[in-house]
Figure 1 (tube, rainbow, N blue to C red):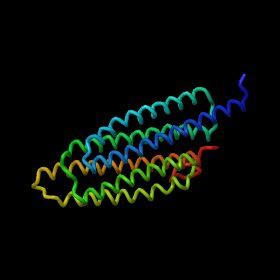
Figure 2 (figure 1 turned 180 degrees about the vertical axis):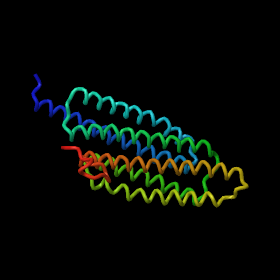
Figure 3 (figure 1 turned 90 degrees about the horizontal axis):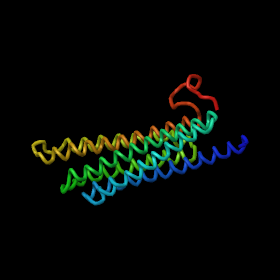
Figure 4 (figure 1 turned 30 degrees about the horizontal axis):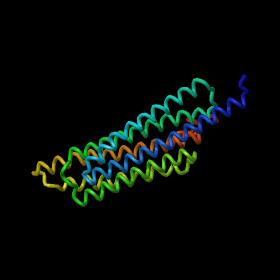
Length: 231
């Protein structure tokens, strides 16, 4: 018969395995962000295809994480803190999968714009957006890995940078010649790309909020007496 200490040890080992899976999922997602951004900047169809194919790895790992979480919940009766950790893993997996999907959309934009190149101003902004999206995702996953609520709280301020970059890109594309059909098509596609990067940044903020909840039992911005969950 399995003793309580043995059961707790097995549970903690399973949680640690899930933590490692989420860190790997975060790494795959940041790779997708970097790859899709560079493919778009270089008008590289081969690189864009690699990003699209790479998404199968993200999906597979995300589904594996979900299965492990469900199995863990079915076999164990976790305490409140452990339950928050498992639920957080489920939520973070979903957010990272969505971010990777958005980068597939960016990679597909490379196809739609090919063989046209981006002008220097648009290239510079998109390059910065890609870097910002990758950085926010990395910080959010690191905050989860270290159970660092303070680092997670910094994501909301970091998100302002992405908002400013998005506004800069919109202002730039609105200055293009509205009589040029090719310019209009490129403007539409780049507007969508800007939205994709914004959404990736939003997913990073959501991950950070889940980390804060995991650590404290309180939803960010909520009153502790109303929303705290006991430890």
